[in-house]
Length: 201
Length: 188
Image (cartoon, rainbow over all chains, first blue to last red; front, side):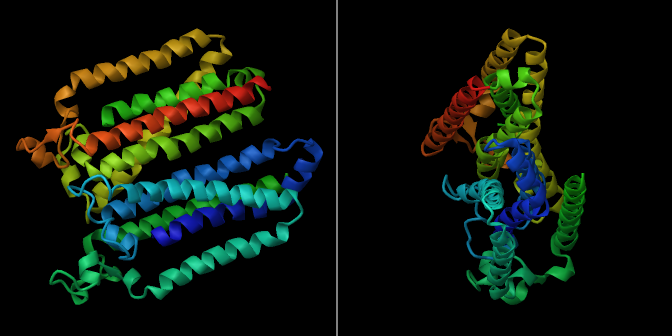
């Protein structure tokens, strides 16, 4: 979901820094330079994860089920063809937003760790995720229904009752979403294990 | 467009490698990681947005009218998956390949060949545009529209203005990245 993907990119970057924070502190102190090797290594991990995991997952759901992917907040995401130059800007900003959120999440987390303010780190990314989850939860039952903006908002003679439930696998949505979640979980687990291992070295 | 997005990505990667030539020659892994991260950030902030913008708004034109399937991506899991992966791959893989090929040439002292390579890719883009001028300058959002002749001129506004803005933004940011990395590179 658009409402979750951008905060997720921010939070994952901060999580990576949180896992490796002791080593970052140590290496930053020892190197004496503003941006040591570890800064670039973890900036790379953060941006690469966002680019290779969150962006394709978000784009896949946005291309296939644009209404559901932004929980029916706007019709603009559904009407991209033959609507002029304006509407395609929004999915474009969504992708740029994911990468920038990952970048900013890392920069902020790194700054806090090297300046001794790492106590802010965990509450920040947990709060960001909780707020994003609450925003989605308040839009109940949008995330359980697959269809169009008009159907969800009972417009143009269409009704919410005609929408399919996510567990009914309408147009292969259930399988697609499960695939995205499996891909995300495997990649995130791999990165966490990899960073933990690097932390112990 | 599909045919020119790949050379554009290669050019971006090679230009970034050229800008950081001293960093690459020095062999410091920190500097290489810096260049690689900047390549990814550039690819996702300046190449992917252009591809996504045109792919979602004018999918048939963006794919050079090669595929009729682009007309029906919504509610089609296989096509949506293919689109999601392709759009990312079209920006990221060529940019990384461009950086790696640039690094390879710089490490072997063939910097002139590197510059000839990205200038050659620029000329290749112009040749591709010329050879596919029928598809390039006749715009239709859907494949079926193109087949039925329902197209509009590439130079018609607001399409042309937006294409121009995105193109200037792309090449301008590449120049900006080049100058910024060059400045850092001189300090190495």
